[in-house]
Length: 287
Image (tube, rainbow, N blue to C red; front, side, top):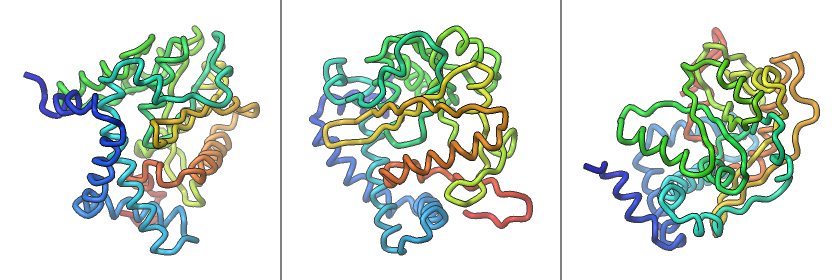
C-alpha cells in the first residue's frame, strides 16, 4: 500500500504552481506558530548571524523562511512526479553553465537553500553528466525508497552513504563524475573543525576542500533561488584559488563565500537547521 504522504504528493503534482505556492504560504504561516521549538531555532540562528538587524526584521525573515520551507516541500510533488516538459519550463539554469561541460572532475558546492532538490533535479535533467551525491537514509523504508528513486529520476545519478567513506567518492570524481556536495551543515564534532560563519565559530566538515583536492577536481558553486515561476539555478564560475593544502583556511573561505550567497536571499537559506548545535569547549549552548 502506497504511503499516504507519497500519495498526497502524487495527487497535488499536476496542480497549477500558483495554487501550490499559495497553499505553501498558508502552511508556512501556520507552521511558524505551531512549530514553536523550530521557530526558536530559526530566530536563534538569525540573532547570531544578523545581530545588526532589529528583532522585527529578524522575525519577518523567520516568517518568510517558514513560507519558503513549506513551499519548497510541496514543490517536491511536481519535481518528483511532474512531466519532464513541466520541469524544463519551471527550472531555469543561468550563469556559467559551461563550467559543467566536458569531463573534468568537478565538485558542485550546493549550499542548503530551500531549492536544493530543484537544483539537483535541474542538473540531472538538463546537463548530460554522471552525478554522485551523499545520501542520509530515512527511518521509514517507504519514504527512503521514494526519496532515493526521486533523486535518481533523470540522467545518471549515484547515491553514496556517509558510511561508505571517501574512497568510492574520490574514485568517482577522478573518473569524471560530478559530485553534488552539501557540506554546510552541523554534522557533529566528528571530523569537524570550528571556523567562522557570520563571525560565530561553527562546527564545519572540511569535506569540500578535502574531496576537491583528493579528486583533483575544480569547485563550481551552484545556488538555487525560488521564483514565482519555479526556480532559477545559477551556476557560478569555478573557484580559481581552491583548494589549497590548508583545510582550515579553505573551510573558512567556503563559509565566507557562502555568506555572500546567503546575503542575496537570506530568507531562502535553511535556518531551520541547528547550525550551531556543536559548540567549542566551554561555550554555552545556543538552543
